[in-house]
Structures are given as C-alpha cells and as structure tokens.
Length: 361
Image 1 (tube, rainbow, N blue to C red):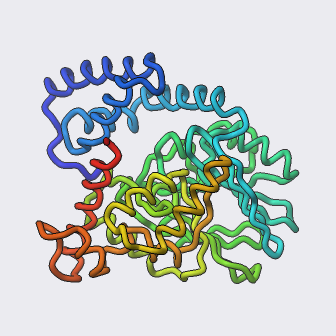
Image 2 (cartoon, helix red, strand yellow):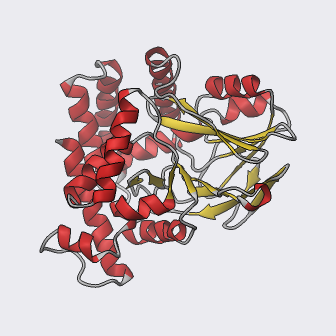
Image 3 (cartoon, rainbow, N blue to C red):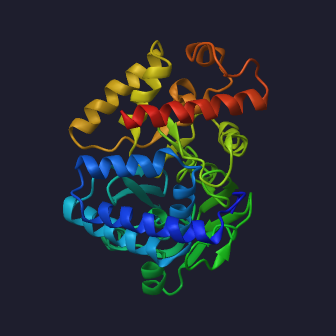
C-alpha cells in the first residue's frame, strides 16, 4: 500500500467505531435518501483523511469489504434483474467481445474465440450474470483477467474458478486479488486460442492495477483495451493508492496506443463524465456531439461502450493535460504553466478536485 503515516492505534480504534456507525447507516438507509448521499459524499470526497484511509483499508483488507460487496450485489440483482444497461456484442473475424452489465454500473466482459469456443472473462464481479452469458454462448471459460482487487471487479473470481476447474485467474501479484493463480507483470501476454492479450501495468487507482490489451492483428480487427478503473469514457479513476504523477504515467501508457483502439471501461459513467467535461471545456464540439449521442443512448438504457482512444483524446479532459486549450479553460490560479510532467500532474490533480466538487453538487 502506497500511503504514508498510518494513524496511531487509538486513532484506529476510534476511527473504526465511527466508520462502523457510518457503514451501518449506509446499509440500512434507502438508496436515494439525503443522509445516504451525504455520508457517501463525506467518505469519497476526502480521500486523504483519516476516516477514508481507515475505511479503505477495511474494505480492501478485511471481511467487511466482502460483506459490503455482497450487499451491493443483492441490491443490484433486485433492482436490475436484466442488468443496468442494454448492451450489444462486437463481432470481428472469429472474435466476439460481449459486455455484461453487472452491479449498478459496472461492466464485466467475455472475450470469445468463436472458432475454438473458448472464453476469457474480464472483471467478473457478478458470477451469476457471467455464468449465464457463458452458457448462452456455449463456450468454455478458461481464464479470468482481473484488473484490480476491488470487490466490484474481483468478487466473482471464487465462484467461477470453482465452477470451471481449469480456469486460470490472472492479475497483478501486488494487488491482493482473490483466488489469483497466475501472476502477471507489465507486458506479459496471455494466449487463449487466437486471442493474444497483453497486460499493461497502470498503477494509481490501486498499486497493482492492470489494463488488458487484446491484439487486433491475429483477427484483422481493431485492438481492444479493457481499462478497468483506469480510464472511462471521458473520465479516469480515483487515485486511491498512488499520486497524480503515478496516474499521469499510467494514462500516458494508454495514450501511446493507436487511435482506433476500442475502449471497454469498467463502469457506465459516460453521461456524468461528459457533463463534467463540458464544465471545463464548454466550447469543445467533439464533447458536445458525444454528449448528444450518449443522452440518446441512456434514454433507452443502452450502454455507451465502446468508444475509441481517438475519440477520448478529443474530449476526455484527463487525457488532455498537455493541451493549452484545457489549461486556459481552467483560468488563472495554481494550475500548470508548461507542458512538463510536473505541470501536467498538477492539472490532473486540479481536474480531480473539480470533478469531486461537481459530483457533490
């Protein structure tokens, strides 16, 4: 874990009791009530404070995190029995990418070699939904690719790996991923049939966060990036276990990929993210066109993935820290004055702060 200065034991005890009370209120209060929204905002907006650090540690290191995930799973299954969004697979030459809507806004994915009838699951947080897709497609699950340890991405590893005895679970050994069997490092390749999937280390959201790049060359199609909580349509993940410099470096790893690469994110955040992008770059016509399309999709509860990295470069503010137009749009203040990495990291941090303020309104 990348944090410094963990609290003294008495602070842990007091903080744990306070956090337990807050968690109980979150669990028993109605989903849309003002108290629930306020407490959630308190916990998420101040990520470097003592209370959040204790809560995050309990979520990632103890059984309390798993119980919270199970509660999320039950509520989402009741509220969205057919998934939170309607999705469409993408078919290429012998390869299918199938998005699976899970929890309240997550996406899992099946990557299928249609000739060999072999499948790879990415972040299978709801094992029931993923298993239903496996059975519907009539494929054999041989691998799970986990981007990071958070339960809303790794929660299905146990059930699926037990059900499919030959299934391998891949991920970073730095991240404490449950039921990990095959650790991966930066640039390692997983081969399944004609599928060639490269792991890229992208720390920041968590210390061991990985994204997965499906090489398009073997099937003569576009490459596909499964980005977990690093990159979303017009957004990026929170920096829980790193700093702005770490996250900037990880985003630059993605920026080095081709414009036609398809982006398959870990969450359906498109409308919210594009709304924020309009605050910092109101004159961005590419963002306006994308927002109109996304709003039409969401009116019919249709999913918005994939986008392309070329699109993201044109409107995603977290990928545009090198752009003078974005720097000028933020106005005078403590923002960057040049194009060096330090200045871009400052801008990234400022964008994150503004995004949190925008979300809390």
